Amino acid sequence: MVGPLGALDRRIVGALQVDGRAPWARIAAVLGEPEGTVARHGLGLLAQGGVQVVGVPAPEAGTVVHLRCGPGQERVAALALARRRDTRWAHLLAGPAGGVAEIGCPPERLDRLVGDELPRIPGLVAATALTVLRYVRTEDEWRPGLLAPDECEALAEHLPPPGDAPFGETKGLSPTDRMLLTALQFDARRDDDELAEVTGLSRSAVPRRVDRLRRDGRLRIRVVVDPARLGFGLRAVVRASAAPRDVAAVAAGLRREPWVLRACRTTGDRPVLAEVAVPGVDALHDLTTDAPWLERVTALDTAVVVGTLKDGGLFTPPVD
Image 1 (spheres, rainbow, N blue to C red):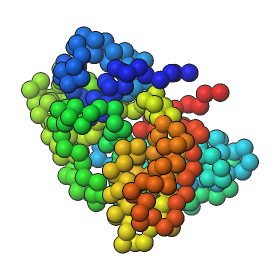
Image 2 (cartoon, helix red, strand yellow; image 1 turned 120 degrees about the vertical axis):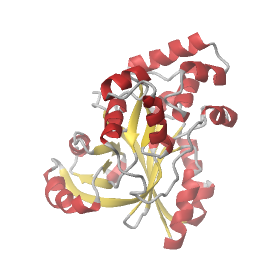
Image 3 (cartoon, rainbow, N blue to C red; image 1 turned 90 degrees about the vertical axis):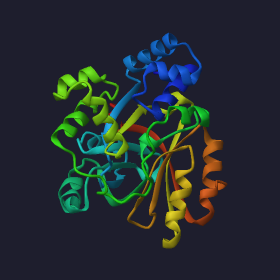
Image 4 (cartoon, one colour; image 1 turned 180 degrees about the vertical axis):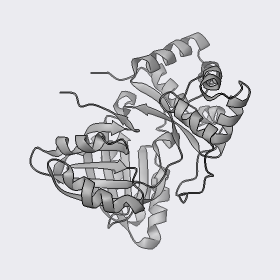
């Protein structure tokens, strides 16, 4: 079992969440620590595999699937979804909720997903497929307060992508851009020399091209880490209802909450979905009863995450 991170390691993760490609020297200067110490800790975190910095393209339309399973079949069904290449994340949930996952499935593919693919999942009794209409927050925007605001500002070179932006606003990717995205997919800290070698770009062209992709929102740098290692040991999936005219305001309120790891607006009778990572039950209570974003919420469902099988697009095999 991998334990919680120490104070400096948590701050390094916080710095990587702001800019996952920032050099160790720059991170050290902002954190007020010796460069050698920060580099040693940072490289150790990445080498152990418990912290990964990955590159992802701008989000495209997805489908959130809620599972209802036969007795004892929740893990089997959720694991089957997690093994799909197009599944972005998959969780087991406490209570009758069973499981939930997000699949990279645009509306034009829904007929095949709902009619042919989901019914083949072992142990599944019923599934509800909800189309994602807008992403309110994605994992690469998660800033759970590991750094002070002035430290975040000193590290931030790229403006965060706009929340609730319609799909399809970013321009198409060139073949070279796609090569860069592929090269950064599993290690977004690959240096410019290595990226030049695998893409055929010149050494001077690589940083300009990567920078442009990031500023355009077509490349996002994401830190994949178990929130429990950062002190947020309780995860839950929250679904909220509001009057149609108030949905945007509820989503905007959620976007301001530091404990929201990801959130989106979907079809269905609970049009706002969020995954939260909090220190414990007291924090979850406050977030779901007293937080400002609840002002216009008319109904709320909360289910605790009891197992994660895929996160940030990376498969997490269950541990017995």
